[in-house]
Image 1 (cartoon, rainbow, N blue to C red):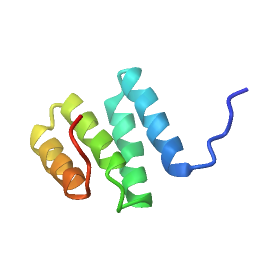
Image 2: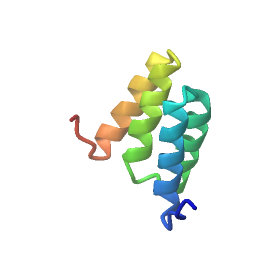
Image 3: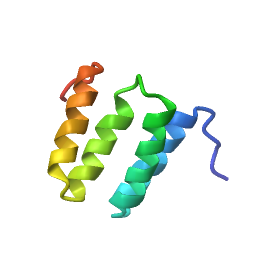
Image 4: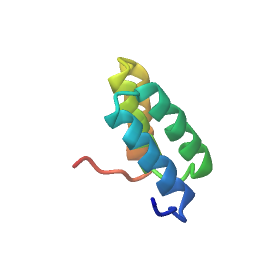
Length: 77
């Protein structure tokens, strides 16, 4: 039995990452969009959203999204 994640933001991001790993960046993008709406002050959903957009070849949107994430305090690793 899979444990239930009590943090909805973490749960959405983890589900999105699982979809990306399964080569479904469109599905992941929908979850990251939901996570960004849930926590607009957080950079994590935007970082993941930028990755999904890159995987979809939507580079201009990815760049704008990543710039938003860095403005919120994200750091490049």
